[in-house]
Figure: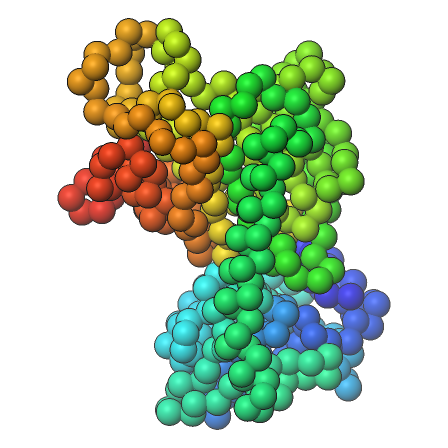
Length: 401
């Protein structure tokens, strides 16, 4: 038993009491500390070793303010100082004392009815390992097992350094397999036509053994995974792969404008058809497509986090069955398009754009656009331009109209 299935900001005193009642012992995913870490060098090194060991393994929670006997929690020993200041101090120690820094490390102070706080530090599994303690030139690497932390040996370090490239290949293979199926119409629900925008949102954790989304909980909040171009879900069903949501009210037996397949592993596939505009249905408007990518990539990443799947998240964008269509750099307001509108006739059937990584869940579309710049620039290349037109001279993303 641990806390990792509970969103950090939703942890309450009741959750902490249940750990004690269940005698939930320290494990790969949780460790208890009676007292917070002091300011002395040894205490700081211990804190950095503890959190880096979680990040270099499977991630977990460090619970500060709970006594334990032989690893089993027994009672609270609350922190009674300024909780906000202590949260900031711990997070600053983590930022300054490790290389590379741990992305998405978060800390919360949980109030107790008896007074004081228990502080929970949530350390995600890192996909940029190994993290090394650099405070006072320590230079040590730590990892966790079910019985606590230990130092990595040379063979383990070598394995950690080779894991990340293998993960990148798995993500790319997933994309290749899925887009090949979509391009020939092998989709979980029929689509209105074959001109498709495909958006894959793939958490790095999707390839971890045992990672499973709570699909039952998601089915109670379907509108967190709306099809592209929609604000709500008109139909859904569970599938062998996970949970499918769709755009049209006529029912899933009818062709849909768009769908979302939420895989049980945490990967999300969003496909939308009927992209082409114009009197001959041969025009693709890049600003319109960009806006959809930015908006829905952020929506799906935020929804995954709500259900316990943290960044980093790979964003992969493809256009399928588009050969001969014209990709316009600017928006259009009329069906008749002048010949001199900047655009490019697409010379291939499929375009698979370079992936981007969301290292954190963007707070707004401007931040999301900034994190997706590599993908958006590559799409502009396909339209005959060196970079996206939707960034100002300072690199700030400006939403297309």
